[in-house]
Image (cartoon, rainbow, N blue to C red):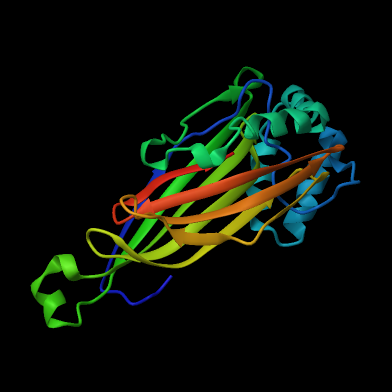
Length: 254
C-alpha cells in the first residue's frame, strides 16, 4: 500500500463464518507434509507444534497455547477430527456448494456469519479489516473540494478453522487500492497469505488476480484459487474480496 499520509483511520471488525455439519477446514492451506503422520496422536501433534515454534513460526505459538489448554479428552477428540480422512471429501463438498460462483450477486451478497460442525466443536471464523489513508491535497481542486481528494485503502478478508477453539488454518485475501470519496479509481495490487497446522495437508494457490468491477458496482476486487490435497482427496476453492470507497463490502471462500 502507498505510504503517503497525513491522516490514518483504521477500522477493525471481527465476524464469524463457519462450516456445515460434520465438516472441518483442517485441510486448508499451509506447509506441505502430505505423507507425514505427525498429527496422529495428541503427543505427536503437540511435538509438531513445538517444532514449528522452535523454527521461528510465531503464529504456531498461538496454536500451541490454545492446544495446551485442552483437557486430555478434548485433545483425543481434536486429533480424531484432524485425522479423519473423510473430512477431506466433506470439505470439498462444502466449499463447492455453489455450482457457479460467477452467478453470485456481489452487490446483494451477505458474507456468512456463523455455521458450526461436530456440535459446535469445529467452526470457521472469518475476520476482516480496512485501513484507510487520506493523501494530502496537492491541487487547487483538491484543496477546494474534499470530494476530489484521494484515499489509499487496504482491505482484507480471512477465514480460519478452529477445532475445540484451537486455530489450525487460515487463508487470507487482500486488495490495496485508491478511491475518491465516491468511487474506486485504481487497484494497486491483490495479495494472499496462509497459515496451516495440519501436518499432513498439502496445498497451493494460484497467482492473485485483481481488477475494478464494472459500474455500477465499481469495486476493487481480488481473488485466488486455493488447491488442496488431504488423505487422498483433492479440492479447490476460490477466495475473493471486494471493497469500495466505504471499505470492505464482501468476501467468500467457495
